[in-house]
Length: 214
Image (cartoon, rainbow, N blue to C red; front, side, top):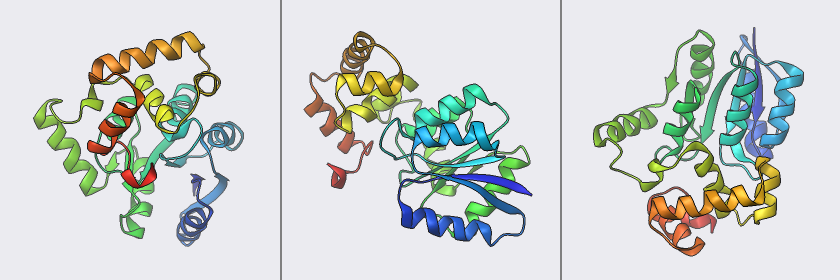
């Protein structure tokens, strides 16, 4: 039996995915979480085989939660679940060691297949994600400017775009206000921008975020 922790901030979506997974005789949903913070705690308590992780969540977000979970438990398998199939996030997750990536628009059965595949020690990326990763590799980093950012810088960008204050970001990422500011100016320099307004425009242009969310 494959024990799965489901992390999704939208209750309706979470309920639908839980129902889908529970219908498979080889899978048991042993826990639910609605934020990155809850996911980290649940992994420590429940010791799941697989974490199905929504990436686009408030708070520390799914990417940072993945990083912290992998740092503490290299055995747990994580499958990222998101509406974004391109941009820097898939590459960041690959660097972290996340073995699976599923788009929320993927067929229902594909989610089950992905879980079984990563448990067997293999990687699983839905077709759109795999194609975008391959295309990005061909471009050798010549696509989105956000690909220049480190994992931590990407996390800071995500929090800035959520409208978090310096103090809030400091608490969420467990680093000092001074370090947050250092990351902010480093991000500006890499992206060749001067303020958060320009950052937001660039994020929309390169689909780092959806324009409908701002």
